[in-house]
Image (cartoon, one colour):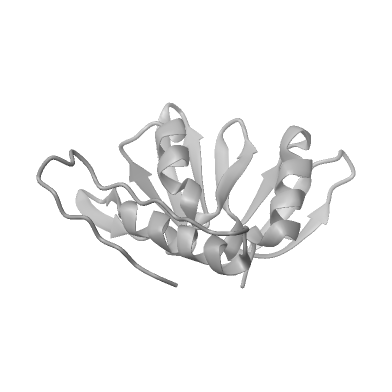
Length: 151
């Protein structure tokens, strides 16, 4: 693999172009690593303290009573962002929509079971659990099968 860097003050932003004969697992991993570098940590508040949250430690993000919270190890930490903003920010960290009010971290899933009403009950490594509504079950299953889940 060759790496070329073109430094020029006329460039307004950093752009990365990859030239390859075909798509490969190596390229996929490279792109994921590059995307991870561009997103940062979330800032949450708990008991009047600001807390830095790394996306990999979050089980799921949920909206409740017009506020957004991150579920981290049985704790709920408020995040001062809209749910859709958090979803866009965490897309590269394998977060996906579970329901209208929840986005979940596929890499923190330990197990899941199908409920009688068609919903999916997801159990996280931390002991948290959350439900995936019927509308999003197929999407979550596909992402888990394609490698969005635990490594």
